[in-house]
Each structure stands twice: as structure tokens, then as C-alpha cells.
Image 1 (cartoon, rainbow, N blue to C red):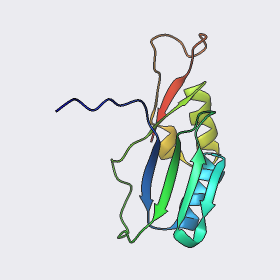
Image 2 (image 1 turned 45 degrees about the vertical axis):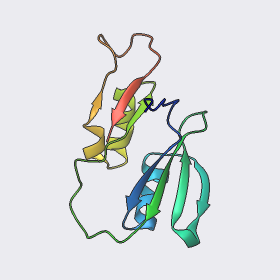
Image 3 (image 1 turned 90 degrees about the vertical axis):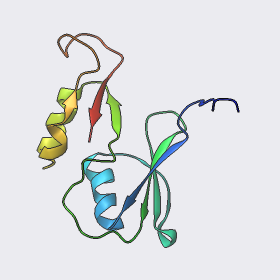
Amino acid sequence: MADLEVLGVDNIMLAVGDLVQARRFYESTLGLPVKFAVPQAGVVGYRLGGEEPGLMIRVQALPPSPPRDTPRVWLEVRDARAAAAALRAKGSASWASQWKSSRAGPSSWPTRGETFSG
């Protein structure tokens, strides 16, 4: 059997317990633009950059729980420190504390981007 040839990421789907709360986080806190929404199906898709792949959320029955360690999605941004500061300003300190640089050296150096995990 041949190995699976992965060409890239099509979409990422995350389960959420509360669609209203999740939308507030992804749209207001992170500022992700809505790509499509099908509220009656409990699904919302968000654009991630200028390419076709995106992040989708789907409501399903999830027991209330504290934040989980997984799944984790890394988002590439121009300046991870600035993104973390903006998230802290919006009251999302737990996300803002998890940035990391995708390269060595000061963040003021020109770079293609940095990653932000949460």
C-alpha cells in the first residue's frame, strides 16, 4: 500500500459546547473573519489568512470542563509579542502567555511570521 500523500491542510474542525461563547472568542477576541455560518447546523467557518483552508467550529454536547491541553492550533502571525499583547488587552491572558517565536533572535527582525499557539 502506498503512503498517503498529504498535499496540505484542507480545514480544521473543533468541537465546542457553546456556539455563542465560541463565536465571541473566535470573532471578538481573536478577530477571525467569518468565512461561512450555518447556525441551524451549529457550524461556523473562519478564514485563516488568504488561503482556502480555515478553522471550523461545530457545536456538540460537551460536558463543562476547564480549558484542555489539546487540541492545540498554531496560528502564524507577523509579531507574536504584539498578538499576545492584544489578546491580553482583550482579557485573554491564558492565550496571550503561550506565544513562541518560530525563529531565533529578536522579534523586531524582519521575518515571514511567528506562531501563536493556544
